[in-house]
Image (cartoon, rainbow, N blue to C red; front, side, top):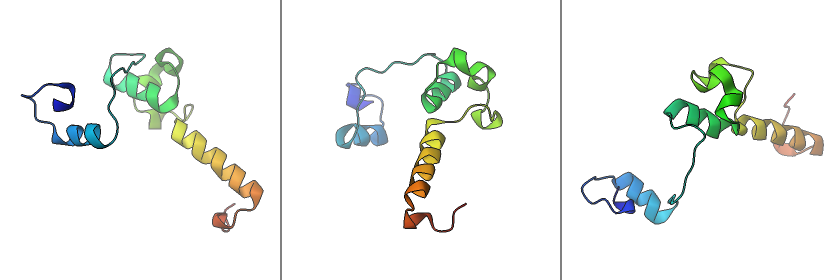
Length: 91
């Protein structure tokens, strides 16, 4: 990760994003494990609120939706109410 000053690890993809886009200097997670922290980021909830869904696949648990799904659904409702022509014949 040359973007963070380590010259013996070669990460050209990360270095490109750091140079041309986004570089985190301070990042925090509610859980140090991979799946729980990812579930927390995707849903905007704490891992203790997700129960088993933070350990297993979120897609297998319909009780929890991701932030992307929530925003998509809200946008769909708002566009439909406004009569937006991009909605076509959506139900």
